[in-house]
Image 1: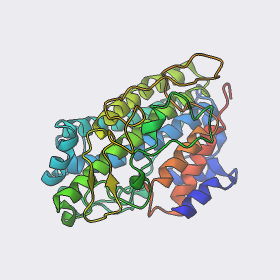
Image 2: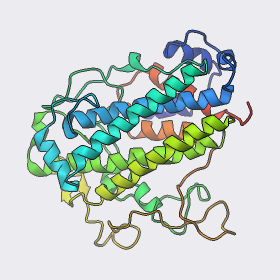
Image 3: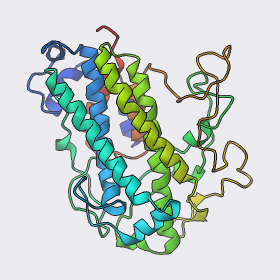
Image 4: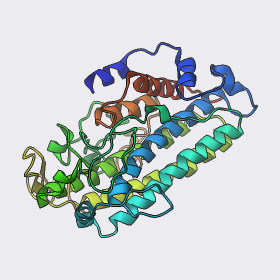
Length: 362
């Protein structure tokens, strides 16, 4: 994983469009493709392609969650469910299977719409199927097929919890500030968010720790999308493309708000199988107070644009510089792509670099 992050930090070779085209099945490689067909600028197409890739990756992970913990029906690809995992998820909220199902369907519609929109404008859609090489969970309920994402070795960044409660700091104004982790032990090591096999279904506190991990991971993923859409919207040229981003982005915020609420219901416990993983009682010392209490789920007002202005309740961060590459580095650092190929990481870097290079009017 460290090598993957280092690769993402390296300078782009500037052969990004050609390599990207080959990787995702583009019929005609090169920036010229996006000038053809009439109505999309190179930048708008690059932003939409990056967002499509991000939504495909989100869909892949949510389908895995739904197979084991969601509602199984014809609306989304499903497995058969896993009763013990579902029971542990319901400790966070009795409606968790429905919420997981609906979040999965939402992400599916996002990438299918963006791909169809790209095609309608003469630009090629994104297809990551060649990278579906990662293993599935062996637990009862999971389908056995190649995956894009790895939910069995996660380091979940839970600093979003305190970032959204801070009244004094905003990452856009304070890029060097470190927001405390809500679950410090979850942000280090590698932890499963789905049962890896039926061996993970017992003891009871172990499968609950896995469900707790999932609960915090749900919110960690969706807060990223919450920031990504307004960050990239500042770079688009077309009013219609802006409408697409401003219409999809708020649904990511709705997801984040839901999962923020549910994560607060994760019961305090120590994983008996991995005693380094501890879920604290966030309402008691050394936690507690407004930065940690579990019934505060609205974004607290914080400085915005300049400290010369009054504080304001906002999405944070929304800095546009490096937004796409920042998202890729965040997802990579979480372990979500452990086991993926160098070509996969290069493709993500190329897509992110192109999106971040987009300039209004170009």
